[in-house]
Image (cartoon, rainbow, N blue to C red):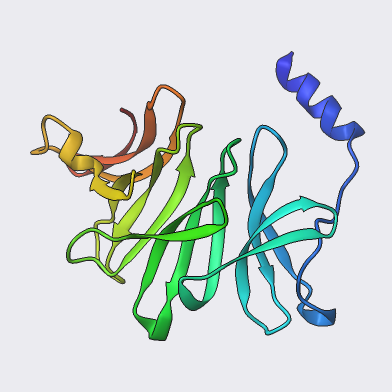
Length: 193
């Protein structure tokens, strides 16, 4: 019954074009996350043919969140405090790092030691963020937690690491319960931590 109500509401809704900072054929944008208060994040083409992380505040009102020095960035998650997570190219092709955006500043979340790439994909209302750290074309990926300027491998928080490797962290609730994907005895499994 609850799902039927959601579908009925969606059926009564109006599609809203959130706009783009690009012009003419480069007027593209993509949305990836929404807060409980209705703020939307994603990416938008710019008039310089790049794609930047963006916060869409209302039809046509778009905040370009910038990059960490490269040409491309993408915002993936936002909480009701306006904190935003995603990833961005670094300058001169030096990799891609996750970012934590707060109060108009994009903070480089870094990557785990020995990794050149990271991304932050989700966060809760307390500003605890989750994502991945990795090297290009290398497996396995490593799920990470980002808090107070520190990136930590979630594996380091698991008691029995001999048989479990957390390779993805997709969501975190207000009680800091994490959902993701772990490799358990060689098979990928959905997990709750």
